[in-house]
Length: 77
Image (cartoon, rainbow, N blue to C red; front, side, top):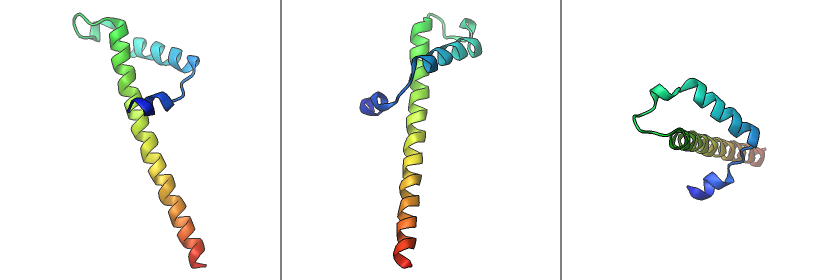
């Protein structure tokens, strides 16, 4: 999991946009009591990265499946 997260490429602009969106969509009063913004942002960012990794894995499986189908069709010609 750590290696997958290290492989995710996020630019500074993406991080700034993410933080601004999160702060706007989830204001302080919606946070758990005693939570700091930093810890909350880390937790929400980790959730987002996990979902992005899962999506990337699903896309890779679909790409591999498509390549296998194309190769099989070429072999049948």
